[in-house]
Length: 396
Image 1 (spheres, one colour):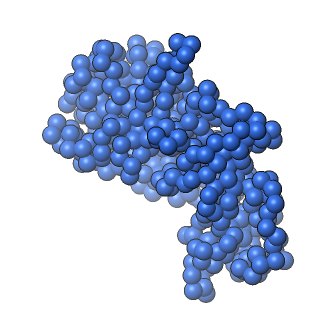
Image 2 (image 1 turned 60 degrees about the horizontal axis):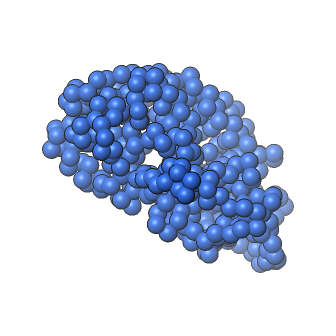
Image 3 (image 1 turned 45 degrees about the vertical axis):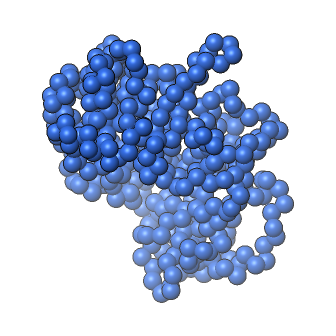
């Protein structure tokens, strides 16, 4: 959505093609546009490129701003990024959870600290290159309600990463490329001869880049040897069928006596549920997958094959303190339920399921068992029209 009335708009220009085209479209629409590049990370420990990727990104962003003929500003948010995103990330991994730093980066940095910096420079809105859409309407009391909808390009939809934004943040946010396909964005960039037109999409952790995760985490988490225990399929034959929502949402818990020690690792918190690579244990016909992580005993439990029953569950649990409604007016009350579309990780196809609100938690019951439900990740839910209305941190 691009406003019709002229506004002063700060574009979070990252040096990538998506934010470049967002700036281009706003400039062409007659807005007073300026570029704001944020530096959020200095340390190269654990990064696979071995140098400061942000320096190249800043150079390209400056060239784009010059090409479009818009002012260029720079802001260093590295201290607050470390406090709100990276320290949180270390803390979650240490507890055996798998956080999503990109979600936190949008909530805490791009649409908080960065937004404040943009407003201080006189901006009315902040625009980014996210593939998602925003619209608004007036409710019966005259209040403006803002909506986030999935992007037109289903292969690039990035609404998931914005699942923790609130109404205030959305009131200041613009997503100019949400109605475009990635191919259309590339074409616009080439036609305008933008320096970022052929730049590859960024990968890895937001503003840090692609990393060797164990090496990156070793900045604060000490390696320590533990056992890798294989759990065989036969273990599940004697288990009783869950009878309650609480039981459905509870992950399998194992003890070493239920399996066989087949190897060792250098720290359970360096791994995540559903992970296949990085174990370096042979002697199996099918790949090994991580089923469970026990931080207290520093034990990793694994199973052979992608169809291993320990990888699948029908439900998950979100505590009230970890529940966030983008649309507070649609928040479920205790005892209410809602059929909706759900995803538990970025790029996962939407899954059919039901939200069930209870006093102790919000439960998500899926129509089909889900692979690799991981504590610390965000579950996100959508209405049939593609509107994302809420999210929450998976408890266990």
